[in-house]
Image (tube, rainbow, N blue to C red):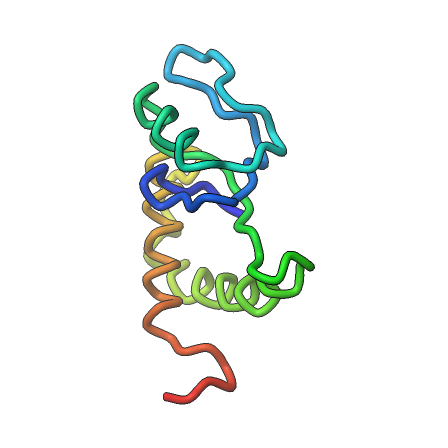
Length: 114
């Protein structure tokens, strides 16, 4: 889904790109489902952000369909603030992702009670 700061990664999320330490060594392969122990190890190796796909609660791929749309809507809302930011830098990408998630939290999901 996106680059996420390691502190925000949840158990059960899937890595969608190789995770490397600051020296370039591969610590985790794409497709690995993250455990809390692995998350702690990555933090000890100095990993700041990783590319992940959040797992869905139902396990059938349907739980995140609405979240992806909300994520894209929030990202479009914040685009003017990040138009000149170089998101190829991991830290900038992580800040952008965190800002989008905060925007999602502020905007209720469609169909939910306010």
